[in-house]
Image 1: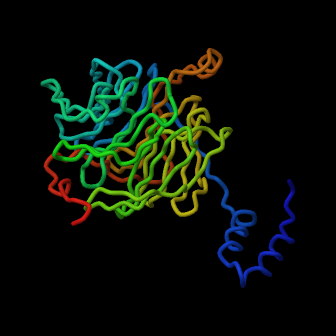
Image 2: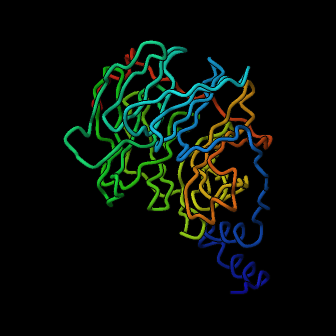
Image 3: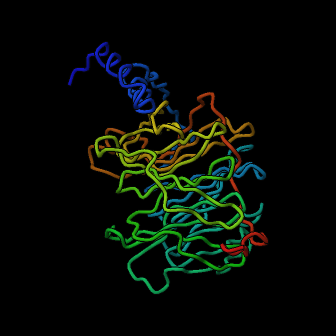
Length: 337
């Protein structure tokens, strides 16, 4: 459909007195939309991850952490010397978050555990112990150190999963249910909003968030992706409050304006299955990206380095990731206080 810009401007100006907000938005969308900045990701670590996911940078230890869900293992990579250590686990692992220099929190199909890097695991919780056929998927810690983790059915059955909050006292709470594939999650820098993705919906939802109580409201849609735009997967936030979203089936990571939902930047990745991203490095100025070695035989042949870790420097900085806080007194605050 062709749009007559002059006519549109005239109509909007005539309607401005009655519908000022709508008119300003229309003029912005059709007449003043910004050019999308485009970048190309470079290979950082050549690998053959079956389903690389959940990458996160732990600033105190200067390490990158990520998982390979299908290979049942997680990785710790020290940026100073580029040393990578692989830790095998017994079941599929959905995500990993840092706790201390010597311990991490992992979400296995069999539950949530504290993993001591030199001394084994300690059980924390298993919200879906009575649900067969599900596993845990993506998750992150909120500003107060509570661990939020979602789930999905192994056969991707619709509405069979949920999003949980694991508190510092090892108690858990269902935060939202009827989820299909729980994925990217992050919080605004002022601690008043939470952003969340249930991938098959194509939506990034934004919720009002109370950091004191760890509660959210019902949320609204910030951005919807049509099927031909890719499927939103992992997500992180930058220092300006904008979102960076990995798009499965679109070979890219896009930056989303947190006020309008408009794509402003795109990082092209030489892999069709882009899964997650995080800002890392001492200045938090490097975007690290995980991918999966999955898809059709042609897709894998055409993208021989898929399943690797990529990076891109766009001139944008991130914010430090939150560590799990098992002794956080705020985790016991009730909603009615």
